[in-house]
Length: 72
Image (cartoon, rainbow, N blue to C red; front, side):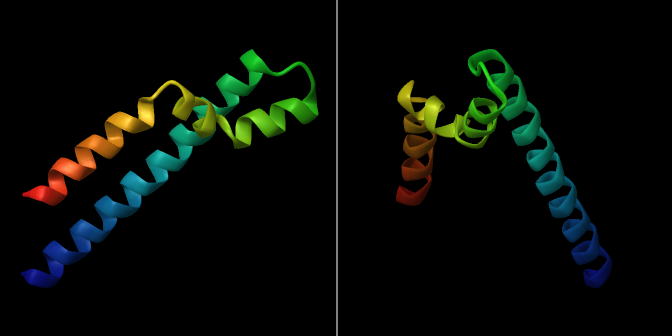
């Protein structure tokens, strides 16, 4: 019974990780197509779009949530 639950959990982790990768690539592609003028710029923007989001303090919210979770 424990092995079945463990294998289900591993499958769910793989699914979540794969979905995250797909979303990361999709959002990076959209942002790159909006902000870039050429192919080289698109690659640079697509690879570093999370840095752009950090400028807008989106990461700050994530850090605050993680900090509150560590205090508990």
